[in-house]
Length: 149
Length: 157
Image 1 (tube, chains in turn yellow, red):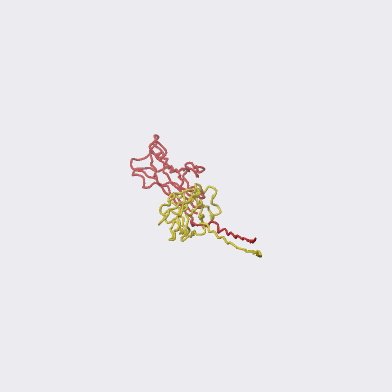
Image 2 (cartoon, rainbow over the protein chains, first blue to last red):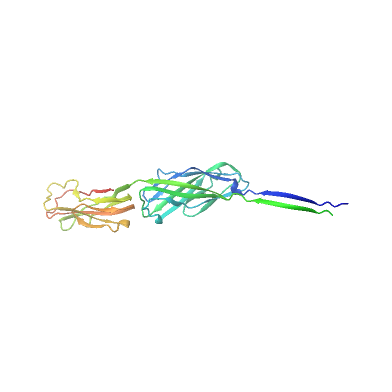
């Protein structure tokens, strides 16, 4: 009997999908800050202000975590004392995220998003700048980063 | 014996890292200067009988609050009677004066009594108080009745 050698080659392709790939975050409405009544804060919760609206979807089989960074002041007038400004962020969830709530904080925070969240849940985000040195007239902008992991 | 060589190629693909979005908030502040008087003053007669002032026993200074977005000039005008003094009041030789002192970010503003208009410049200023005192110096004394003084303060670029 003749031995037959055969060379078989098999290619095996492994495709793994991390939970983050199934997570989607979208800003549906940007926020607007106005001056507080005591003129000590630029605040999206002040009269005339508006929170930002964030839509979150998680199609994965596992829960994911949304990390919320404290805001940074990205645009401000040249004479504004940005070094003495204190920024903070607050948020609250709706729908299946109605249990998500965070009072104004200056630190990084996070919250879980359940698996198979196929209908977008909306989170309302607020920003605030407090400055004991006061405010100059001009344009201001803050930025908060939301990360899904 | 059969030898089978199997080459196995494994290709692993690691996926897209965590997703992130920037959420922005905007604000546009125009030049603003806001003045308010949460506490009006009270005048009292000094024991000498020739001075009616807010900083003698029984008197009370007025408190003016200022908020400024950007640079503005605050002008404190000399006082005047308002309403007019009572009948019988002799104003010959009388002088009406005002002085003021700043608090917090305005502690450098300390201006003594004078009968003239004076000004100072403010930059970005959160809610800050200015204490204002007014007085009348009259060698003829004062007829009985109600007296009131008005000090006009303006703020503008």
